[in-house]
Image (cartoon, rainbow, N blue to C red):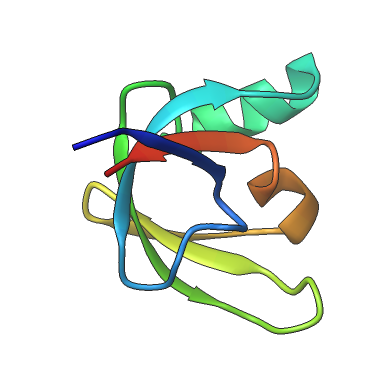
Length: 79
């Protein structure tokens, strides 16, 4: 089975993925780190809003909403 890379915005609702990389600047990495979204962490995409709206994910047992631009900076891997 091959591993697929995608951004959080490309991830399908209801699927899990492991954070591989955070792209973008230091501020984006700090913000995501504060929310518990760090490389190696497994997250579940709960929902997304149309027209580049926020993306809601579960990180461990916490649900967080990310803006579309920030969610696009999260690179995940899954199968």
